[in-house]
Structure formats: structure tokens, C-alpha cells
Image (cartoon, rainbow, N blue to C red):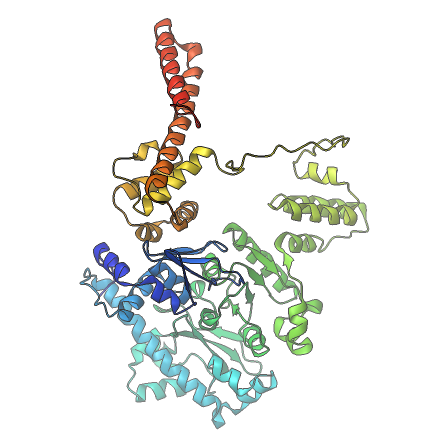
Length: 586
């Protein structure tokens, strides 16, 4: 049946799952007060910044900001979708799945996918066995000639499609697979009353998803057969836009700082053969937004390592556009002499590959902007400078912008001020540096980032999330910050912090929420009550300031009667604010 779990059952599962026990299977934890801490499993660190709060059912890393409920931890650690993580936990805790809403169409689609997975599994086994038979001898020699040994061939499940027209079709039909399923999986073609294998006389690369299911195949032709590479067409179980090659190995890698994205299957296999982790390839299509989002789940940054020829360089620019549109950090590995990753690492080795310095996206775009231009001429330099100025408009980091401007002034001869004007930026006037201005020291309690009342709101929300604020102490409308007001409303309605962490779709809201929920209040008795009072009074003072400003702005257009009313209200608010002043004497 289709999986739509009742919220009450999700809550029960969340409560039964001991988040400390679950997390401890991935990283050792030590108790630290009411919470537990350890080294973050999602980024490399030497000093523990990863905390688990069993009371709230939450984890949070103060380093990389990863955080959420026990279900979200499983999603992150096992690279699963929400429903997959729920089923994983339910099975682990021996919690029976609830009755689910009947959705016959969804059941039918899932049944079709499972049939295709099974057919593909049998086909993958057939192709792999064929590789080590006389029918696959030529293809095995080809793979060995490309520097692949038998362990790497087994790791990727590589195989061989026989040259005959219908060997696979007949083999699987004899084992009981209906021909309809073979056609549905894209392994068999029916045309004009005849049927034949889709893949013939090709080296076979199984395309496996993160959970080990064979989605389809890529086939590399032997000899001069065309097309050189042939992929399984889209099926009910496979869509080239949504998947990448070697995702199953990517899921097993831990603590990746980057994913290396290449163009070809052989590039992936060769780089992994030489010890490079976290390598995947697109599936015969240009990078799609769906693939970019998928890769972002595995590492904070993507390194695009396409072929060094002109077609590869053009594809890199398109890929960078996709990553930029999704605000995903990306860099470029550029290979010399038009080489592809496979050629480069086989010729120069792992150390030379590791020594390659990735270029930032703007830096790579600037290098490509010179293609086809004669920079020895004034016209060429002018066109190059104009193109680069357009690129620099998208650079967000001031330091990177400054470095690129310095290089551009040297390569074009134009001054920094002229380049900034071309970008549409007015250069600031040069200051007279006679005596450095003294910086005012901020009070110890002040923050350069958040207003005092917003800090007070977040402190109060932390106490509320821990159940330390008496009922009726504060109302939702008293929170001025939009995010804080939403969180307050949910907490006041009885929602659990772990539940809220799972439901937060807005990244900004979720970041605020996890920062609030991850703080561990160590306040008791009179000290706790004094902090609550201080927070509510700071929030009230901020509201009074805003109200006085609004009233004052309306004085100029008010009638005489309204002016008297406004002035009286301002006077009353001013008196109240004075009474709430910190350090006042009762």
C-alpha cells in the first residue's frame, strides 16, 4: 500500500526511538550535563561540537549546523528520504507499520518498479557472468587494457553484453521472466513482430541507486558501433534526470568535503580504482537541477571535473549555471591538454590528481571568457574586460572579488575603478588615513548581530522548548521577530521541538529553530524566574519603543483631539518604559 503515516504514529515512533542509542551506533557519545556530546559524524572535526538532547529528542552540531530529530538523523546518516527513514526506524525498533490510506494507483506503480528492479538484478548477474565467459573475452580484455583489475570490476558489477541479437532475452525468458517485464525494463525491444536485446556487444555499467537497486544500464560499444554509449531509456523505475552513476558508493562514503562530478562511467571507475572517493557521473545528459540537489545531500561542495576538450568546457559552464541557480557551492578541476579524468589519472597518478587546485566558479568563467579573443589587441582586451565585469557582478565574497579584480587589472590594463564602474559599482572615495579611528567597545551583553529584544525572545523560546516557562507567562503576539513569533505559536500550542524540526521547510526558519532548541538552559529556581522576567521586560521595552515611534510619526497629520490622545499615550508608555529600565530602584 502507499505510505502515508498518521501523525500520531510518527510521534509514537519518535518517542520510542532513543536518539542517544541510535546516534551512538554512528559516533561515540559522552554525557555532558543533561545532554551528550561527541565528534560530528557529518564533518571532520577534532574538538566535539556535536550534541544530543534526549529530553527534546534532538541532535545539533554547533560546527556544521546539522540538526533535527532522530528521524532526520537517520535521513542524514543513511542518505534516506523521510519515508525511508521512518520505515528503517520502525523495522529497527520492531514497531509495526500502521494502517495506511489505500492508494491503488500508487500500489500499482510500486509493484511495477519492484518487478523492474528484479529483472534488472537478474540481467546484471547475467552480464557479469558473461564477462568471464568466452562470449565476453573481448570486452574483458578491453577493461583490463583500460587499467581495471578484477576487484574494481566486481565493485562496480561491470559486465558484457553478447554480440548475438537475443541472448539475454532468451536467457531471462527461459528463467521465467515475462517478456512484458523485459520490454518494460528497457532490456528487450519489440519491433515489427521481432524481439531483440537492447544491449549487444557492449561493456555494461549497471546504474545502481543509493539502496542497491539496479535502475538500468549503460553500455559502451566495442569497435566502431554507434552510438558509442547507450543508456537504458526512461522507465517507471528509472529517470536519467533524477539519478547519477555510482550513487551507491557515494552513500557509503563518510565525511566527504566534496563530490567530484565527471562526465563518463569510465572516469568514475578509473578515479575510484586509483583511490579517489566521492566520484559520480551524470547519465548521458547535461546536469539537471534534480541531480544537483541530490549531490548536495552528500557533501557541502561539488567539484566539476569534466573533460578538458571544448565540449567538456562548454558543459562545465552549463553545470556551473545550474549550481549557481540553486546556490550550491561549486568549483572546477581543469585538466591540461584536453585530457579527461581517466586519461589524466592513469598517466599521472593519484598524487597528481590530488595536487590539482580547483578553480572557483567565477575564476573559471573568467578564464573561459578569453576564448576566441585576441588579448594582444585593444579590442580583444576591451571585450574581455566587459565580459569579465558581467561575471564579477555575481561574486558575493568581497575577498574573492578583490582578488579577481587584481588579476583582471593586470590582464586587461584597465584600472580597478574602471572595472568597478563597468560592473555598475561606484568606487568609494579614498579616505585620508591620518589617524585610525578608535573602535567603540561594545558592552559585554551587546551583540553585533541581533537586537537585544530578539536575543531575549530566543532565550525565552529556549526555556519554553525545555518546558521551563510557566503557562500564561507570555503570548505569541509579544514576539516581534517573525521567525520567533511562529516558533512561539507552535510551542504554545503544545507542539514538540522534534516534530517542529521535521516540518520546517524554510531553511532560514529551520536554522533559527535549531539554534534555539539546541541551547541547554542550566537555570533553576529564583535564577530561572529572574531570567524569564528580564526577557519579557526587554521584549516589552522594544514594543514600547516601536509604538512610540509609530505614534510620533502620526503627530504631524493628527487633529487636535488626536494629538492630545497620542501625547497622553506616549507619556504613559514613557513612564512604563522608565519603570522597566534595567537596574531601576523599586
